[in-house]
Every structure is written in structure tokens, then in C-alpha cells.
Image 1 (cartoon, one colour):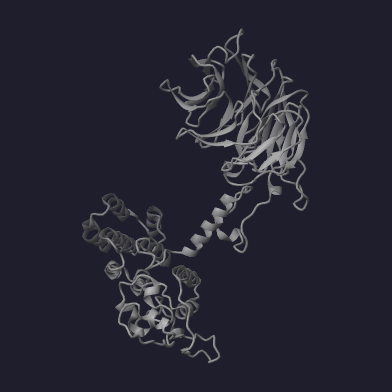
Image 2 (spheres, rainbow, N blue to C red):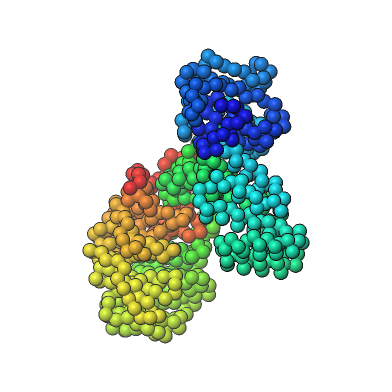
Length: 608
């Protein structure tokens, strides 16, 4: 085997093991165009490659040489010989595994992207690997450097690298599209039209795309063309983007996908974040925001497990709490017949009383904010047939609704659709409803009823269907922001997570004590990755959505915790309402160097 002919004679070899393995430096083509699959810098063009002869003529001859203890090693300036090639015959070089070769190629590609071409050349020579197939290097150089008139010849150069006619057609279409746009930018309309008619159209690859390209002929100037075509313009930027697209059609053994090492590192960082049970912050997607030297970990001290504030203004049991959609306010409802609206300082995370809404004779057991946070609905318990609609900004009562002075809204076996003035628009009879939820489509209402199920009711076409069926009464439920998941508090069973689209039970969360009291749970945290619920054992339980075991048990309340609410704007802020008459605000420990925050119990933190 000749050192200068290795790249041409083994055109069918796709891996670096079969290319120039373990000491075969494979200098590439004559004239300094290719060395180890890379464009050779002028300074490195004089490097000599030592050649080892073989007893066999097959493609495994290099490996046989290694087995016989004969190794050629090229010194790239790191030895004592002043940078001259050194031949080490006595030392047997280790045979690289496939994974080791892959790592070397990944490192080489990354160094090449950084412009360290001489370092890459030395790495490939010393390891005996080849970064990419010589024909792939020709292909790369052609795409980046060819003039517009010669741009179409690249697919023929790469024919043996692609495995199907359809892939070669995609190559050709992308190249011709670049050629067409460059002609247009240069003002060569006739040449561009010729490309469109004589080269692109006969391919019949994507007729709709051809029509779009023909519309660019009407662009009056280059800026208009770049804007309409979403194109970077003639130059290295658009050629690099074109090459990235073309590389997706080549096997990775021939040409690595662009920036492959960075892609793998990003995937590893993202996987570590997903597996971190306490990760509750939004980080930048790039690698610059993290350290690759350490595994990603979040301390539970960064989690909302510490009591930051206790609100004691209510004078009786607090049945419900709910943050506004923008996170700037908290509404709490109590057995003392009042609703208190609190202002949230989004910087200090402290709360202060803003308004008190009075007159709910039976107490307030449920609250709901309008999507724009202007209005607040207050409902009473089962024996109350009234509903209050408050304007939170003015503190005025907009509407008071009541469909029966003799019975409650739920016990008659029906529920109603009304406008903001309290006018009845529609009703649904025959079911006794425990809890309602309006989906984001603006037409579907989910309702849990006494048949231990959740049904969907469409008020446009007046249809209904079963979605969830439980074996025990559903005391309350809430739905995720995307409308896909539902969190149910089920009597004597605890908290269940359902997929509403697939209609399957996903998780049964453990630890919480749930009898026949109405307890409200919630989604929360960054990306709604966490779930929190009150409990009859006076605790707040927190789970990662993937883990059925609690990752935190928050203590401090002295009676049943009826409701929890997670701030949608501040992932580290959680509120809980209890029969002890208080509302607790939970946040991260105030000082990260303190021992575990008071009120945080030891708990399991393993993925289920």
C-alpha cells in the first residue's frame, strides 16, 4: 500500500479503522490538497508519512502489521528530533476501538471548527485515524469555494458517498437553489432564469418550491431577495448553511454531522437537568451557561421548602388560595366570609394585603381568576347557591349570580353557562358536578361528577363524552397549562395524574393523606415539572412529576392543608392555605450556607 494512494484506492471504506489505522498516516492526494481527510495547511505540507509494508494485499494489512509488532509513528514536532518524522519499530501501538476512533474524530472536527488545522493534522497522523473520506473533503471544498456556474458539479463528485438516488436529488436541488439565488443577487436575471427552467424544473423534485423560487424574480434589490427568501446572501454564511444541510444526507462514517461534539454535550447537559429532581430554573440552551467539568446538581435548599412569610389576616379556616395568571397577586378565600387579595413583590417575593372583598355569607371555598386577571370569581361551599364576580382593580362587585334560593348550584344535578352580567346562556342537566375546569379552546368544559368520572362538555355542538373514570369520588382536579394533563385528588386514594388526550392514568403519588375533605393540588415550577398538594396530616407534599415518591414534605401548619398554589411567574414561590387560619408562603432557604431549612422533612428522591 502506498501512503499517497490510500484515500483513492479504498473508496468503499467508510470508517477510520479501515482507512489509515494505527500508524498508516495516509497523507492524501499529491499537491497538498488533502491530508487525513482535511485541507492541508501550507506549513504542514512538507510533513513526511512513514509507510509500513504488508505481507497481505487485503484491506486489513495495516492491522496485520500491528499484530506483527511493526509500527510506524509520525512525530509532529513534539519529540526531541526538532520536528522531523520518527520511525519507532520496537513499540507496538495500541489498536483503537471503534468508540475511541469516534471520539478522536469528534475532537478533530471541533478543533477544525476552531481553526486549529495543524493540531488536527497532527492528531490524525498520530492516531492513524481519518477525519472524513477524501471525496467528502473534495465535496466540502467544492461547496464552499466553487463559483456559481460550477456549483452543480458537486453531486457527481459525491455520488459514491450517498446511498440513494433520492438523496442525490436533494443534494442537487439544494445546490441549484443556492446557484439560482446567487445569480439573482448579482443581478444576473437571465442566468438565474436559465437555472430555474433548464436545471431545477426538469428534476421535478418539489413543484411547489419551484413556484416559490420563481417569485423571487420580482425582487427589486438584494435586501428584498434576502428577506423574502430567508437567506443570508452570497458568501460563506449561506455556503456554510448549505453545507450543513447537505451533510445530513451523507453517512457519518464519511462526513460527520456539523458540530457533532457540541450536539452531544448539549444532549448530556439537558439529560442531567431532566434527571435533577430539584431543578427549578430556566437556563440558557447554550453550553456557555454551564460548566462541563462537573455534573449538574441542584440543592434542595434552592427549592421552595422554607417558610418565608405567614399571612394571618384571616380569622377562620382558609379554604382556598390562588395566584393570578401573571403572578403579581394572590387571592385567598376563608370561612370568615372574606376574600383577601394580596400584592406580590416579584423581586423580594414578599406579600402585602391589597384589598378585602366581603359579603360571602357562607364562606369562600373556591376562587378563579379571569385570563386577564381583571375579574375574580368567588364560590361558596355545597350549601351555597351564590356566586360573586369581583372587579379586582376597583374592588367592586360586578355580578352576583344565583340560580336557586332553595338549593345549591351542584345538588340539583346541573351546571350553567352565564355571561359576565349573570345572564343564563345554557345549562346542562342530569349530573351533579363537584368541580369544573374550562379548557383553553374556549368551548370545552371539564366537569367531575358524583359518578366518579370527568366528562368533557362542548357548549358549541352540545356534545359530551367520558374522559376519566376513577373507582372513588373525585374531590377536586386541576389541569396543566397545555391542557394535556389532569391532577386529581381522589377520596381515600390521594393524588392521581391522568393524560387527558390518551385517557390513561400515569401516576399515583404517594405520601399524602386524603380522606373525604376537599383538598386542592396544583402543577408548578419551571415547565410545570412539579406537583404540590395539601394533606389532612397538616403537611404540604411536593413531587417531581416523574417521581411517585415525594421529594419534599413541608411542615408548619397545625391543621389540614386545604389548598396549594404555585406562582406561575416565580417558580420558587408556593402558597398553602390551612384550617389553622393561616396562609404560608414557601420559598428557597434565605441563606444557601445554612443547614437544611426548618420545615423540610427528609424524604425520598428517586425516580419512579
